[in-house]
Length: 271
Ligand SMILES: C[S@@+](CC[C@H](N)C(=O)[O-])C[C@H]1O[C@@H](n2cnc3c(N)ncnc32)[C@H](O)[C@@H]1O
Image (cartoon, rainbow, N blue to C red):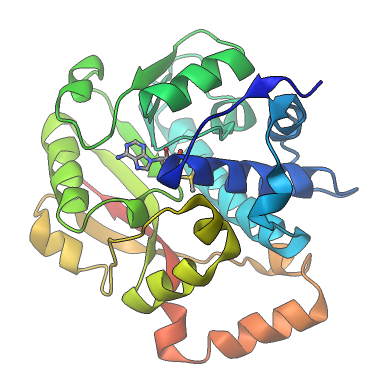
C-alpha cells in the first residue's frame, strides 16, 4: 500500500533519505539493523524515493550509524532502568522499537509538528512513549520532560541542520534542565559539511547545513557542564566486514588522513 502522502521539504525531507537507507539495509538477507518499521513505513509512504539517489552503500552507512547509537542508548538504559531517553530530530527513525527500552524508561521523540503528525499516522503508540511536536530550538518543549532522572540524549543526523549558535544554546538548555546523563550525536567538520552539500539527497531536498564542529572540546567551552567522553568508532570491525573490499579500502585510506577523520564522527558527552 502506498498511500501516505508526505509534503516535506528542506531538513525535514532528509528524514526520508535516512528512512529509505535503513529500509534498504533491512531488506538484506543478513541485515545489521533489521528495521522492519522503516521498511513498512517506506512501503506505506507515497513518495518517489528514487529522487534521493540513496544506494545500498549509503543505506549501510546509515544502518551502521543507527546500530552504533542503538547500542549506546541500550547500554545506558540497562544501567539506569528508571531513566528518560530524549531523541532529538527523531524523524521517522524507529529507535524506540528497536531498542525496546526497559519498562521504567520514559522515552521522548522530538521533531517538528508535521513530522510528529506523520509519525503518529505510521507508527504505533506504546506505554511511556511521548511525542513532542516542536522545533528542538524552541525553549518551551522541555517543560514536558521530567528533570530529576538520569537522561540519555541522542541526536542522529540533526546537528548539521542547526544554525551554529543554535546548537550550543540547545545543549546548554538541555544540561541546565536535566539532572545529568549522556549526550551522543553525529558531528561534522566544515569540510564534512562541504561534502554533505554535494550529496545528491541533500541537494534534492534543498536543505542547508550550517553547524560544523572541528574540535569536540569546543563544546565544553560553550557549554561548561558538558564533559567530552570520547568518540564512538563508527565502524566496528564486525560491522565493517559487511562492506565490500573496495569500500573498506576506501575508508581505511580515508581515515589515515587527519582532516578526513573528523569529516563525520559520533561524539559522546557526559553532563
Ligand atoms: C537527516 S534527518 C534524520 C532523522 C532521524 N534522526 C534519522 O536518523 O532517521 C534530520 C531530522 O532532523 C529534524 N530537524 C532538523 N532541524 C530540526 C529542529 N530545529 N527541530 C526538530 N527537528 C529538526 C528533521 O525534521 C529531520 O527529521
